[in-house]
Length: 251
Length: 362
Image (cartoon, chains in turn brown, orange):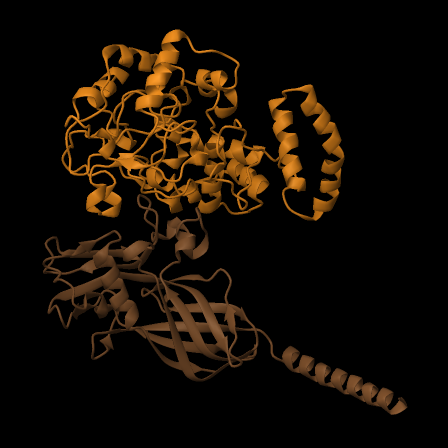
């Protein structure tokens, strides 16, 4: 009986020690921020993409100069090495090709730890598209919201093209419901571990290819405007989303 | 729970209706005090809760926002904004310019409203009342939420011609508005969401439920013989779409109006062939006050509307099946006597307490 008591005491003490060690370990990993950078390339040979630069579309064979290129990325989740997921609250971003800062989305307050995958939604979820006035990246004042046909412009591409009937192209692509639902969730495995511990900048690099918007699409001489949801908005934006790829991480 | 009680208090205090209300007020006054102590750490306690009041035969409203709870101060701020031309690019047009209380918040009996610089759109300015029950807005139903509704007229080139960014800038330069937004939403900088929240508070409080029809329904009045006769015709021939008590079922239907070029109705926002020339079912409440009628204001009188339904309907492949009669004819069979009676009944839906309620005017 006495030995049983001693045994229990040992178990109790050792469990306390083990627990406190674990606790120390967790506490030692500080929260940190993760930045996800979207680099833009042009065409299958991944040439340089930038605004205000004349580009030739490899499939259409037409020249085009972007003046604006923006798209929504939302609902960011990170997968921990233990297989559980951390979800960023209020996770809505507009990626804007106009500036270097615009191409980086920053995820603050990520719990310390090691991460193996990232999940992103391209576009905006239907819940926020139907829940009234929003703020931040979802504010209508960003010019990415259709006032007359409620919903977000999930991809916005504008510019000039000499072959277009009026010399310009305007593609405002979106649609959050039914067959023409555009928003798409993608998961990318890093292949190595992204460490978040508050002492270093954790970076994820993605590569997006705006030329893919016109993959299999009509020539700009035939179709240079699309400013509402529909089958074309869906095929153009999902063609673009489908080839956004993970490139590398920096710890 | 406390908030709910506070709602009741404020509602009763404001409506100042009965001794019973005062008793409830006293009973809950203790709770109010307690809640002040409990809530002293939280923000903007000076706001008084305010609740939507409506008859028990109304369904629950769709707009019951927990993130934008209606307060007296928020409602009054929304009311000020609704009446202020600051929302338009050249400070000439307010919401009230085309949504006047005396006309149940429709325009002043014009077919197509005038926006900035005398520009005109293509559709009749709809009345605003019982908007808290409305699942979608505009004649084509393109807008899905009361909070984002005002973005359309504010930014439309032929209406207010502004940008949300610039409206917000102008409001932030106005110290009186800055103070009021601070009081209502506890923000130092006004953003478009808070502007839209305030407008939604005002618009959702525009409840029209005090017409003669409502008095009759509450056994406080009786229909005249001809009104009663009209009501019976209405129930038999109109109420399947203009469903009581809101007098609409919020569906989209093709009602056989000859189409004008480029006007495709709901098809404009869905691109679905079946939505061609369909429009949102409007409520018939206050209908006598909101002429001219239909999506483009083409009919000046109720009789012209009734004549359209009885005799002048145009066939379409997606004409509402309710209008396709067994004898091969189209429309709603109505005798001249029935039309006269219907008009008498429809006038009982005019809600003069609503159109003259000083709480809604600035």
